[in-house]
Picture 1 (tube, one colour):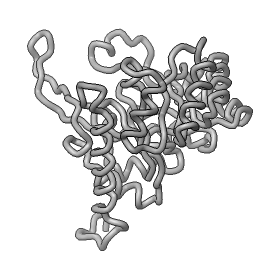
Picture 2 (cartoon, helix red, strand yellow; picture 1 turned 120 degrees about the vertical axis):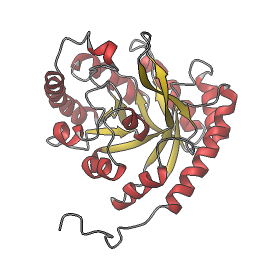
Picture 3 (cartoon, helix red, strand yellow; picture 1 turned 45 degrees about the horizontal axis):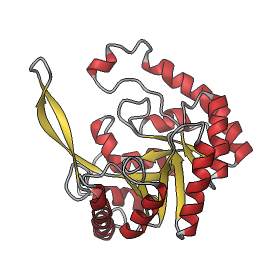
Length: 287
């Protein structure tokens, strides 16, 4: 297990230099860097590379690149990532709708977006081979890849050396939820790394008074995602890579390092607590 922090929630409060210091305080081994404008990405990534390597840390990935089928833009992002010593780039997951309010304004149907994504991935594979990069999507609510079950449907024809997925168990609670074991089984070699966070549903009200589900962020050890179950699923497929913390609960940025430290200890406990293999079935199931 190796741990990193995602910088998207920190870059409005800290400089890149300060983020590296917070990463060291948190005890992580790497950083998942969030880039800003494409026009400054190469310069920014070069600085991030120097700061990261000088601190003895690793670059897990760069994120926030453009929509995957905009090949000319992705080429520019790719060149910036290479300047920044990266080998993994998260491209934008095609967006469908976050909720009912967005859905009523979405003029394209879901499978049309999926097919456009597949066409874009063909071009991404060529770029991946050219630049030696792996392009990753995220299991993200509102996107065409909210559910892990979309991964084998769309990516199975593509080489996992050049494309992959960020598995975010908390995001899949919000939409597209499947058991962690199923999620890992269907994504397998496409999993580039995991996003770590947690949440809990609560009852809320729409503006017109209808009851609806809302959610609040929780610490890693206190939410809907059972990381013991996640660890068991990963163990079954011998997956032992990067876990990147994002979307922190702490209101003060200065408290993030301590939150991550506690989260790391919880994940280690979950891995130790989880079963190492399948056991004799307690029911005949399908027999």
